[in-house]
Length: 233
Ligand SMILES: [Zn+2]
Picture 1 (cartoon, protein in one colour):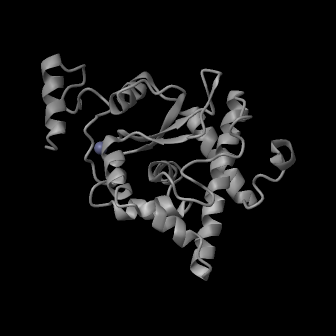
Picture 2: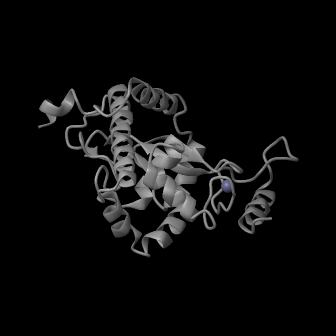
């Protein structure tokens, strides 16, 4: 099946959409994760982020990672379809609160309705699905990763269901607004708890802000700065 569909997998994407995905993927490959960024994501997740290519989206205020881009094949062996992965604990929590209201079933039903608005959302959601695959294909091509087990699998239930809001929000953050209609909707609806523009980050990218000290701060100063940040001062 994969072979038959390979040539037409992105049939709902314009040339502009395809080149956007390629440019986006190439950009992340040029800004590969630093040790400091991997360390920050490790603290966010409580585990090492295997296969992390780059930080996919950041807090607009402090620069902490919100989502990461992960390669299609981890350690050369494990197929990983969730290319855009939400890592910010505050974002994960806010989206979980929305999920706990059972909104996924309602969104899936609305997506299947026969009115014009649902048809438009369906088309946009299908486009988001194909952009996800197109983006990952470029990563796979550049990194030499096989996609044989995940070729037509995107994330979050796309293209016809709404299953995991975290995955859909991660795509909205990595691609920016106007790509994933469901992820964008979720971001709007949890804005009082999480927003890219408002820093509520508990994990900072650096051990301490170095505003007044050009050289590395002393450990005590670093600890104080971290606790200041944790208290949102
Ligand atoms: Zn922040």
